[in-house]
Amino acid sequence: MKVLWQEKKEGIVSLLVLVGAALALLGLLAGPVLYHADRYRSELRKDARILQELRAIDAVQEEIGRVQQSYRERNLQDWVYAGHDTDEISLDVQRRMSSWLSGGQLQRMTPVTSRAAEGYAAVGVQVQFTATLEQLLHTLQQIESSRPLLVVERVRLSPLNQRRGRNQPEPPQLVSVQMTVQTYVLTGDRP
Image 1: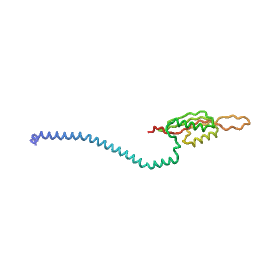
Image 2 (image 1 turned 60 degrees about the horizontal axis):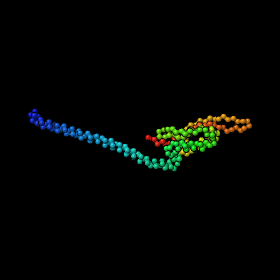
Image 3 (image 1 turned 90 degrees about the horizontal axis):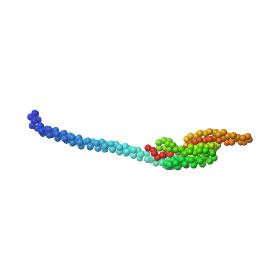
């Protein structure tokens, strides 16, 4: 065997170098192939997730259509303000409150806009006025039955002292009212 090794030493070394070079070349070629195969598998997983989401949307499409039809039939679009211009909405709330308070004595009306939650804003007015209990009830009924929907966020009532002379009928009870009336609108910055 030593003799065989001595005679074919150069051939065996050449063969080992050739096998080593072939393995190195195979390693160099396999690296990019494996990298692209991994990227391909991740793209396939991503496409499978997107396909699953699209199938889920397609599955509820009929339900969405029924909800839209119900929304239109019940005129629910009248319950909310359309658009995102909070200044116009605030002005409309001010006009409506002014018309409803025509019987009372309006002292102050201030526009109020604040972020209610992510993607929503509370738009309305803070109003202070003096009115009789009947006028106050009428104003609250107007707010309650209004469309688009308005919400009384805060109310503070204080009875006013009144003097009455002799032989005069008792005047109606007056109250000083401070309230915040607002609605909620989409701001357009939802995630």
